[in-house]
Structure formats: C-alpha cells, structure tokens
Image 1 (tube, rainbow, N blue to C red):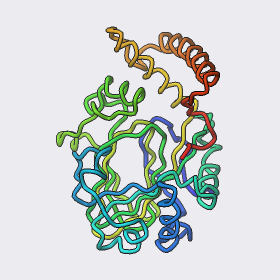
Image 2: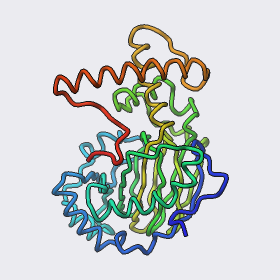
Image 3: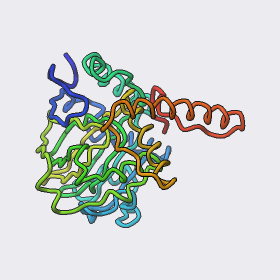
Image 4: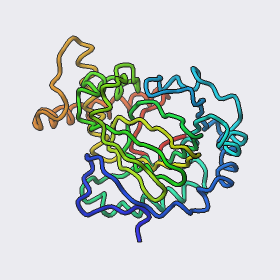
Amino acid sequence: MSLVELTRDFEPWKIQGVTHHLANHPLLQLDALVELGQRQEQRRLVRTHSDDAVAGSSFADAPILHPNKKGAAATLAGIAKAKAWMSLLNVQADPIYRALIDEVLDSVKPLVATKDPGMCYRAGWIFVTSPGATTPFHLDHEHNFILQISGTKSLFTWDPFDRHVVPEEGLELFHDTNSRAKIKWDDSFRSRAILFDLKPGMGGYMPSTTPHMVVNGPEPSITISFTYYTDATRRRELLYRGNARLRRLGMTPKPVGTSRPIDGLKTAVLAGYTAAHSTLRRALGRSVRRNDLPYAPA
C-alpha cells in the first residue's frame, strides 16, 4: 500500500487532490513534533510568525513583520492558544525524519517517474498552526505533496500557468534570485482559485511554482509537505533564469513553454554555460548552486 494514494491519471503539472495514510503516524503527533522542534531550533531550522499575517502579507517578511516571540517547544506544546504559525524546515536534516521522507516519496516514485523522472532534492516541511492562522500567498520551486495530519484547513491554489496571477517576469525573477517581489496578492484572485478543504487523510499535489495560500480551521492543525525536484523542474528553472538574464540585457525573451524548439536550444546553451561556470567557480574555491542533489541542503 502506498502511503500517498495517486490515481493512474496523475499529471505532474496539474493541481490535484490526493489521499494518504499518515494521519496516525507516531512521528507526526504533537509530542514527537515538540521534540523535533527542539532539535530543529538548535539547527536554526524553524520559521514562525503570529496569526496577524494575512493573505497579502509578505511571505518572506512575515516572521519579521508579525513576530512570534516564543520558542519552538513552547509554541508547539501550546499551539491551541499560541496564536502562531510555525514551520519546521528541511526536516530531512533530522535522520529520523529523513527516513520518513524517503518512505513516503519512495512509495509514489514508481508512478511519478513514469511521467516525471529524475526525482531529487527531497525535503520535508512540517506546519503546526493555531486556529484561524493564515499562510500568506506565495509560491515555491519544488513539486509538493501537502498532506493534512490533524485539524482542518482551506488550501487555495492557482494554476501555475495562470499569468494573470503570476506574470512571466515574476517567474523569471523568482527562479533567478528567489525573489517574490513581482508576485503579489490581489483579492480578485479568490474567484480563480482551486480550493481544497483538507481534513486528516486528505491532501493536495501542487506542481512547481503553484501559487497558494492557506487558512487554518477552528482547531490546531498539523500538516506535512513532501517536496522534490525532477528533470523537468530543473530544466524549467534553467530556462527562466536564462530569460531573466536576457531581459536584463534589454531583450524581450519568448515565454517559457511557447516554443519547444527555442526552449530546447536555450536549454542546451544554458546547460553548457552553467556547467562551465560551475567548473570555474569550483576551481576558484567558490560555492556552486545545485538542485540535482539527492536531498535539499539544510
């Protein structure tokens, strides 16, 4: 039995609902997460903000604009009254939870790989949220299985190819510098959303760069995301980074996905340039950006 149930018509670039068998997993109960939170806090892998954040709050700046001053253990243990949102980041850094990430992603990999090969850069993110708290509107690089463990929440998602919600230049900047500066919330987006009302045992699959926003239900919530890159996501990121550089040179590049021959040519040129540039940086003792590692670095 797969821990995450996918249908045979799974499509890697389509938002879709999923079901799972993790709601009672001992590593995802609150007492275990309090212990994990202490370990992650020592690793500086905790992100938190108060429940004052709203859909339009800056996702990047929410911890600064809406601080939660309690530590991880205190927030998690008292999450029902903490008025806080907390994420335990990159839990693959913890050996116990890395095994869980592998168990889950290995269970879906046979089906995923038939349509979207090259699974890598595995990571896990655990969200523990007070009643009514909001995760601001944002997007991420990775493919994402987001699974509800306890409590309820409303997951608002938008088609990653909806350029009314995320403009092409916004994606270029995001892939090139990780900036979401051109990806801004507008209340009119609500009518375009694909909504999932999540309960334990339910979840959603969000392809790379799917815009999303989350509103927690009336009870404390525990949610876990299993994320990864594939050959396709790495290719797409490379193309957007290339277009960002062309735009800085004053050009107007053809949007990614509108011409397969042009995308193919760009990919070949950019891959060669990136490989040469990385070799030079290594020779100079400098760091190299990589998204083909087995696990995302913490």
